[in-house]
Image (cartoon, rainbow, N blue to C red; front, side, top):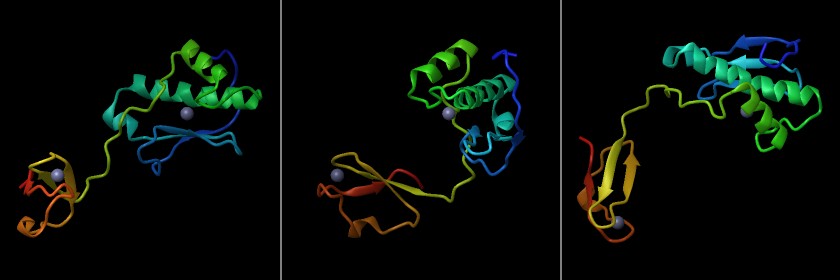
Length: 133
Ligand SMILES: [Zn+2]
Ligand SMILES: [Zn+2]
């Protein structure tokens, strides 16, 4: 509808996509979309992602500039009002991490285990303390 030309290949939801919203396969011309988009965002976002992938699709099939940095891609994306980036999708729940801060240079570190910080120092020589419990 937005491109005024038909989509002649397959599009499907693929649960294996993690943080990407969609993917265009250069070899098979298939499109994959992440069903988790609809858990987090409304349909409008999914449509924006579909438009984005269709820009890759149509330009690639027509041998035009289909890559993100190419002018034709940028122009077509703007024309159909597609999304430039997939909005951040929720990551699968991570294991707890401990956040450590250097009291001198304020640099922060993440560790999976709780350490006895009195034994360690920052690279700058500063003392370390926990920012998380
Ligand atoms: Zn893309
Ligand atoms: Zn430091």
